[in-house]
Length: 329
Image (cartoon, rainbow, N blue to C red; front, side, top):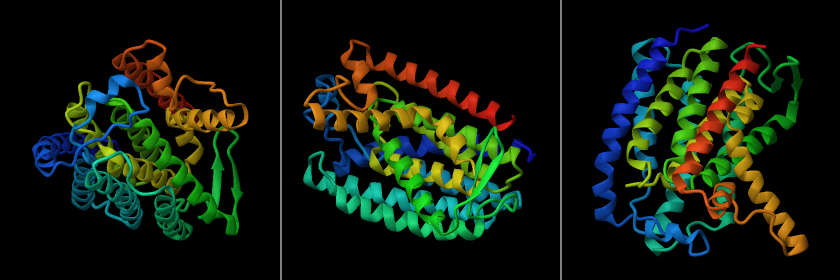
């Protein structure tokens, strides 16, 4: 097991830098009028959030990349795995940035079309899939194999490995994006899930990747200081896409995709609620949830936004704890 001390130092440093970057970003985004435009069909209580600065994900990405590279270089842990995971974060952040920029220019909640967004995600995830075919697994199992925890079974996907990578990255980036609908929800959950990936990386002997996720966790905590209710800034698709992409990339490189699904079960539930809602409505013209994603359902059931966020944070903490326990079985 790799020592935790250096990734923890990276976490603290990214927390500080992320907070500084976010604080500086708020007046800049206000001046440039890069603001959030809330969809009218959402909860009416959210309409007051229209005009809040967005694209705060740039602060998270910047703090993560800077601290991860410095921590890795200073500790002799700079390697191809770390660089690949950071590249995935930046590429998926670009997808979100272009989407956010389009929204800012049009001054509404419509950015890239679904077709444009999925094409960019397909290209970037396929590129990462090719990279992972050669460099994932850390030498413990084959690069095109996947590992099933608890039962400790591996399967070699062969030529189907790249489609698997594409599915994991696109599914996870969009799931985090759907989760980012309440003040502090996605940033708080991701700080916990990233810390789980840090622990998993150290436990399985990876040297560079834990630096990334120490930085991701810390940057999210720094951002959360200004994103908690009432939020002074939102991460936008820039942040949610980047965070989903980096979590998926790290899990793929370490072969812990199934553990990530458990640790990030809140993301999964949010995405499934949308899929179930849309599918059921198309067939019956009726809704199962008052509104999807799931966090809006609880809001419309009468819970305050703060209570919903705390409940989901608690659920994420439990899921991460379960994933850690399963990792060690």
